[in-house]
Structure formats: structure tokens, C-alpha cells
Length: 251
Length: 263
Image (tube, rainbow over all chains, first blue to last red; front, side):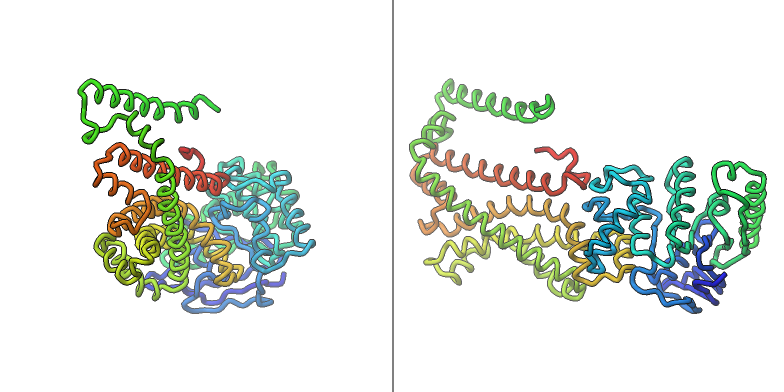
């Protein structure tokens, strides 16, 4: 599998002297879902923001297969981060508005992606009229509308209830397959990581670094039955043990 | 109209009518001299008798108030927008804006009158009322332009939005709730500024409601004085409700503050 981006010896130390990341080595394969899994404070979100270009790195290198242009990176934050004064349609169309694109193609693309995330009929609604899950779907649609090469997701479903979260996990897999987008996902939920990922990097904190890497293969459909299967449970157990060990190594 | 809305209008109205009734009864019962405290009926009669001159004065005060308010709005928002683009400019100019705010308008009014000239007293009134109305707009807009959610800022950075795009699509709409609140305060202060400036200008050069109050006081026409005061209060209430309605109109679809706005 071709690597979309490779990270070498990446370090991040904040201005106050806190070392957030040290010597991070990982690669994200094109077309796959790669997950950064770890406890709070292990630098997952910092790493994601460095990849997005929202934070600077202190040392190391990020090699892209193709240097990303404007709109090649989509970002879904922990909060939906919608513009409360804009409708669903205008929120989803925001990247095009900022790119000065106003063609009929873009309007069709906006409608298409709204339909894809299951929000048809809510185009004129304002964020405060939507549920938490629907807001996150708008956020996902906005991140995907510009057809990004990579979608960065920073614990996007952490604040949602378990049922909504499971539904969004399934929908995310379908949407990503349909859009053929590479995903770098951040979570602290082992179940979510195992369900979504082709590749998992377990991170350890203080300072954040990669502790262990897992490549996953999923036999058959990833649906609710899969969550209850012995194979799924075994993977969850294996990765949970790795996560536990990463914490013990730190302390 | 719901029961709750009806109550919102009726409760203060009934209380006002009861107070007026009590006032009228007490004045009649105690035979209070009209130059000490006129009865509401005397004030109403004075309002009818002097309707034309009071309305002309009301218009003069309203004109200065509105002009001062809009001037303060344009200047305040423009300066706050500049502050949002340049921290250095904000550090340089904000302390002087505070100085302008804390200096009593009564103290600088004579100076402004001398500079502008008594033949252009309306311009002096406009300047003084603008000075008073300016600061709430500046401070609320500055706070609003600065109060941007970190993730929203990151989102705009991710899509490489330019300064103007950030201002137009993010900072300005984010600042609207703050700005509209500042506008409500500013409109009230513009009226106060116009009245204070008229008091200071005095001597018949001004023709607004404040001058009518001074004139009536000097002539011991206390009912007319109360009538002018009543019009001033009504003007203030009108401006407040107008801006509350505007706030409701702009924010009702998306901002929590406008959800249960008291109109």
C-alpha cells in the first residue's frame, strides 16, 4: 500500500517547555483508516494539528506523496465547529465560499455530500436546530465537500451517546469508501479504533510517542454483528493490553 | 398573542396606570401646588397646549441622537475592526479611547462649543453626543471581534482564508451579539449625551427637549417641564425597543440570547 504521508522523528515542544511529542515515526497508507490511539495527554491531537499545518513542529519531517493543496486536507474537530449563523447548506459550502468557487458544479457537490451524510431535507436548518449527531454529520460533510486526499478526525464522536456513535462509525466507513478518502483518526476508544481502522498506532504519553503499531484485517462486513464477534473481541483485548502496557511503561 | 406575552405588556401598563391614578389622587387630596408637583392631568394638558413646540424640540433631540448614534456606530466598528487586524494599533489607541470615555462630557462641552462656534451649535451637540455614544460600540465590537472560537479560527486557517475572508465570514458574524448589545447601551447614551450637551449649550442656541426643560424651569412652567421629561423618557424607551427588536430580528435564528428575548 502506498504511503500518503510519512512522519519521521517528529518532535513538538511548546513555548512553555512542555514536550508534547518526541521522535514520532508513523506512516499513513492511501485509502486506509489509520488511527492514533492513546490516553488523554499523549499528543494525539497535537500530532493531528501538526499534520494539518495548524501547529508548527519543533523537529522532524512530514513527507507527503503529493504536497497538499488548498482543500486537500479535511478536518473534523472534537466539537462540530459549525458557524451558528449559517444554514447546513452554507456550512457545508464554506470551503467553496473561501475558495471563491460558486459554480453549479459546486452547488451540486454540496447537495450530493449533504445527501451522502443523510441530511437531505435539513439544508435550510440552523445548527441549533440539529441534534449532536446531526451537527457532526454536517461537520463531516464540510470536511469532505472539497474532495480532500486525507481526512483528519480529532475524536469526532467522543461527545456522542453510544448508539449515535456506533451508527456514525458504520456510516463513516461507508462514506469514506464511497469518497475514496484516506483517514487519520484520533480516539481513546479501543472499540472504535478496532472497528474503524486498518492500522492502529498506540501512543504513550509524557512525552507522546508511538508505543506499538497494529495492522488489522477485517473479514467480512463491518456491521453490528461484527462488533459482537469473537474476532472483534479478541482484537479489542489485544490492543487494550497494549494500551495498558503503554501507560505502565510511562508510570 | 400568548398569555405570557399579554402579561408582559399588561403587567407594567397596569402598574403605570395605578401609579398615575395614585399620583393624581394624592395631588388633589393634599392640594399640592402645581409648581412643586403637577398632577398627571396638568402634564397631559401642558403636552396638548405645547404640542407643536414640544414636537419640534423632540425632533431636534431625536435628530442629534440618531446622527450621533450612527456616527458612533460607524467610527466604533471601523476602529474595532482595525484593532482586530493590528494588536499594535489597539495597544496604541485603546487607552486614548478610555480617556475619552472617562472624561465627563460636561467638562469638555464648553471647549467643543468654543472650537465649533455658537453659530454651529448643532454640530457641537453632535460631537458631544457622539463622544458619549462611541465607547460602548468600540468596546463591545472589539470584544466581539476578538471572541472567536479556537477551532473555528483553525478551520479558517486550514482553508487558508485571507484576512478579509476571516473578518467577513467569521469575525463580524461572531461579533454581532456583542455589537448589538453595545448598540442598545450606545443609543441610550447618545440620547443622554445630546441632552447634557444641550443643557451646557443652553442660552436658546439649542432647540431640543433639554432646552425646553431649562426654559420651562426658568419660567416655573412645571407641567410643561414634566411633559418634556415624559417625551424624553418615551424617546429613550422607543430607541431601546427599536434596538431590542433589531437584535431579535438578526439573532433569532441562531443565537441563544435571542431565543427568549424580552420584547
